[in-house]
Length: 244
Image (cartoon, rainbow, N blue to C red; front, side):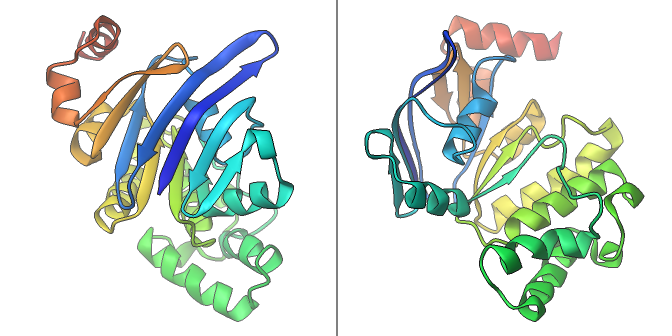
């Protein structure tokens, strides 16, 4: 479902990703953890082609983007395969929740408004916001805005969902409602790649955990192994900070 080969990305003279390779099967939930500045979010943005990669190859479903044979059409098709949920919701403030959800299917995919609205209602029901369809983002709590953002990403019927620290901007009491939606998606078999500092979520929901450090995958494994018997010193040091 996802295959990444020797992905590299620098910002000016500063290398952020130093040759990351990984694969993910359909229906698998992978959680990425690691210290700030280690390349986690940049990695997701490169997968979704929001950042231009310096070298390497990215495959999502049956679409492969190769830096050495860059093609704008392939880049766009790859982007459409991966739904992205950001830290800061990024809802259009002048549009209602319903309008936020249907705008991309209608304008990008050319879907009739009626069918887009019907699927949007199903998604809003899934995330517990059906009664907020006519609200504007400013009328919602942070947790509700993030759930609306998840529904918006799902409306494009992506093959994979990418979550970039989706609870980091939320108060503790609001995080649970977003994590519950994500847990439900994982149980339904959605292929998910999640960058988060929510260690309990990683333990409970992830099929595999990747630990990023210095622009590389320093360790990977099943949650039980990662959290109870980490192999590398840097991983042990990182986890120790969450238990102090």
